[in-house]
Length: 462
Image (tube, rainbow, N blue to C red; front, side, top):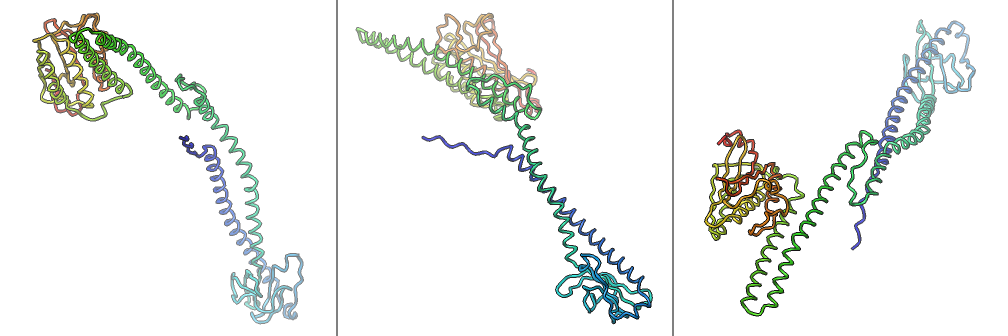
């Protein structure tokens, strides 16, 4: 099978560059556009004021001497003179004076103020005004193309710096982004170069404040992975150690069966083989249960669980096997015991406790299971009437594969380890003490009640 090609991801640097440079360019263009429109408006106002001022000068200079002039042509004194024109009309009908580029007819039909008109296919901006005696009509005009050319020059002057500055700005932004993202690249390379089993924490000393939370999270992850690896190593070593002995015993019994001289001897050896198979099956089952529990972080988020119902179900399940051994199981519980947890795991906890108690109890004895409510907690206790455990060994109860020396009861030494782990997942505590009257062993598991159970007043002092 070919490996799936890695999913292509967008570059963070490219995103930052495109975003920053694009944002600057858009803002600059928008600013240039607003500046262009404002400058164009102000230029038009300035040129309109110039037209009005020129018309006022002509009005002031009109007098009696114009009556002696017959359509006098004013000379052109500037290279842009052909873009500006004026006319002086007597009574608005007789053209007495005009510039060389002015037509022989009125520039605009309007006799007062500004207007836009087209003369010989060319657009003009015209200002019209009468003299004080309303004798002469003065019209001053300017080609619209002149204004457009000025506006175009303004726009060009605004865009040219943008074309020069944006590449320079892009270079500076690129250098800044490369330098700013270098710690991320360094972190990625450090993680990539690591050995798969190297879960030592990363150095957080020189990391920027924005990357420090990521490094801290990675270190936390490495810590959890280290714990899982240690659990796996310990589990593998313990399983190999514990399986070696029963498998060797099983092989020895099989060899005895093969070498048996009589059917009775062979049958006895095969019975021991079957018994050994049962012990190995039980050990493997316990090992698998413990392995499944190791990666679990917490079971209290699964929902609420009625511990009383779980206890009744497990007691009913184990009662036939206990009766076969002449051991009675007694259940004494409160009406309701609501806790936060996983029913399946709690059933495993109870099954291991009761199974241990029955296994280590002599014939014609009692295993007592109680469930009480005390000060916001539910207390589950399983008490047997066996030989008990000395105080100096109780602290080792719950260690993996730990068994009391000299005990004849079959077992793997994992039951109480599973009990401790499940209790830990439910935020519960486990204590070991001697049973009633100094006989046997009493295992107590204390669970926190749910807030609803506390508010209802059910977990009260017994």
